[in-house]
Image (cartoon, rainbow, N blue to C red; front, side):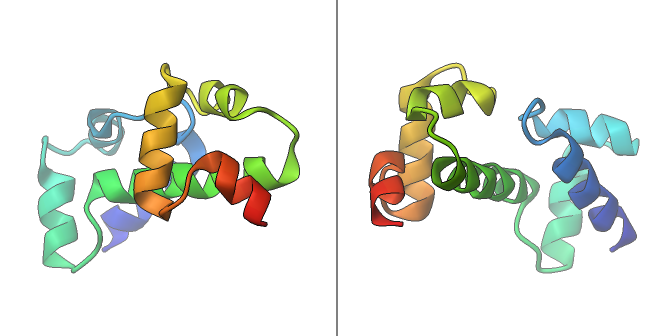
Length: 104
């Protein structure tokens, strides 16, 4: 479980710039897919879901506390395609980034 805690710490540090789980595996010195197996063993969300959840939470914070456009937030979160960002956001929250901002 200690390794998963270190993984979560790395996510908190690099979630904006690093979207690839391979980066985290390399930083932790583990083989590919090891974090997935470890997550499953401890009944924790898969690594990609933990990373995505952190990105969504930060995006929600930015939507509520800044006047940046959704496009600007997508680029600030290191998403190359704002439409992809919006689709992911809606998929995870149930509403679009614009609707999320308007509803809060």
